[in-house]
Image 1 (cartoon, rainbow, N blue to C red):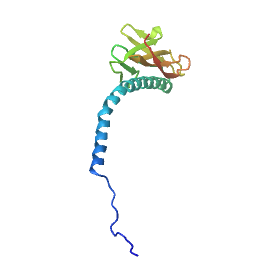
Image 2: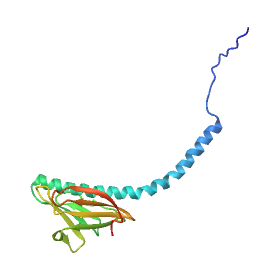
Image 3: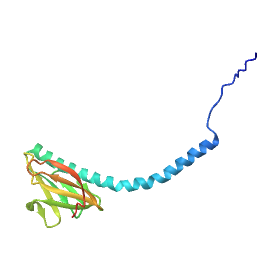
Length: 159
């Protein structure tokens, strides 16, 4: 009886062809990915602009409550900018996003500028800011009684 035993361990690995196939697949995936990401970016940018707008409104409300004085969120539709009364940086909205603002009549000016004013008790003059691109968008609304801010997606918002 002879027993055959090998002293060398069996080495397993990848062949050159297997490595080339994997590299080819990775190259194909990388070639396809950028266009897919590019299509998703406009929607992400729109949502980010709506969130920045809502954050600016929340900042104005918090400032009014903290200071005990009125604070206004001011939106310049033509310049695509908003700011909060006081020493706060202005926010910018991308130029390719369409804007519409609906506020109390006394809070508008002739130059496409509208404001939503918050009072020390948390209430506000109320209003809606609509941000849209193509057929999608967001409505950022402020309840006049409670000052509560909500952001909801909408389709065909600018109609």
